[in-house]
Image 1 (cartoon, rainbow, N blue to C red):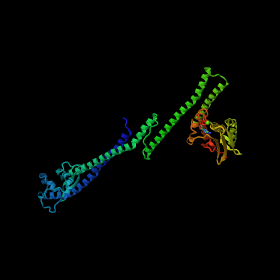
Image 2 (image 1 turned 180 degrees about the vertical axis):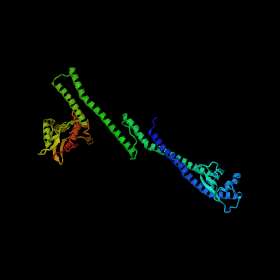
Image 3 (image 1 turned 90 degrees about the horizontal axis):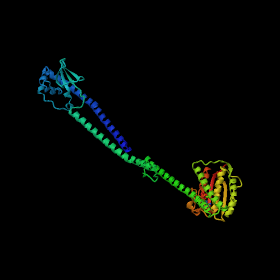
Image 4 (image 1 turned 45 degrees about the vertical axis):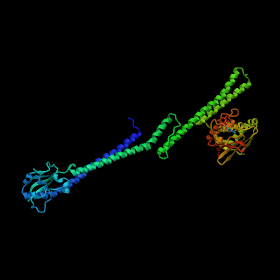
Length: 465
Ligand SMILES: Nc1ncnc2c1ncn2[C@@H]1O[C@H](COP(=O)(O)OP(=O)(O)OP(=O)(O)O)[C@@H](O)[C@H]1O
Ligand SMILES: [Mg+2]
């Protein structure tokens, strides 16, 4: 049988309470039988010692035990403490009334034996462990007064006492059971319900429902934290899933566009709409190159994601790399009608890094500036060492990027609105790759609006020495 947590908790607390109640009951019973019976028996022995002189006096008056054999009713009269005046015949003494000592019922457990230990009167079956007192008259043992100790609580008053004890025991036990049930019920509501809510939500999450959330309660206990962490986990999964879908959609979109163009051009060639000449081949090559770059960039990013992008770092001079790369862009800048102002220090800028990746980084940034700056504009590339880092700043003139879009530039496939057309723009992967490269060098890259009117990209890399 499968029991849920609440039922098990209920059973455990209830079991513990019942065990405590039973232990209390047993304890009370043992107490009663041992201590209370001990007390009763002590009282009875006291009573026995008190009765001995009375019984002696009775024998002395009557001269034998025959009077008791004939009139057993005198027995209880005789047991009363010896009167001052021993001449008052026993038959004339008032019948025994219930004195407080009598209430314990001790005298009912007295037996009178004659000198030969035969029972004359009193308790019918004296026990072997009975307490005895000799009845000595004029130096002769004429009989024995014997007390059979109490073994259980049976006489009226004691029974009432025991019953009261038992009733209290039941009441306390019942109360404990009720209390335990209440505690178990409260605990299962207060503690287990939120846990079971998280359990159900986890089940839904595992089934792929990332929008699932659990109500967070204000308590800062383990359960409150569990709920908050669960929601955080669900949110992260939901975001990751959304990013994955978006990524897949973007990748397929970016692949389909050049493929579509290629397909169209090939069809035109096949149908004879277009002639297969140098111009057509160039156009086909350009589409293939676009596809090639896209696939390369995606491959590079996915390698960076799994941490498998290899870096061969060495001590190098960043000044030299910047100078080289800017030099290689000479023709490209001229054809775009852009002027580059290069502002480099006279001395080297020693850095520990991968020269090939750092060239790729600079080329990506310069390529963007060429692509997204209006003809007739200006670029400024500066580098300098400041404290323990080397700062590279690339400014360009209009157009820039809207402030709200600046933080998103490094997202994959993000393209600012102005360059949404494929004519001027790429896939939107270049800056993501730049960010990966900078991070692999323990540096930072930031985009800000440039005083020149366009975009300002700042790369900070740790400097050597
Ligand atoms: N210098 C710049 N001036 C203005 N906008 C820019 C500049 N650099 C980048 N951007 C904007 O940021 C977007 C993202 O640039 P990124 O280099 O990541 O992608 P891309 O150039 O569009 O494509 P890819 O680099 O993958 O070929 C660009 O589409 C463009 O809108
Ligand atoms: Mg780019």
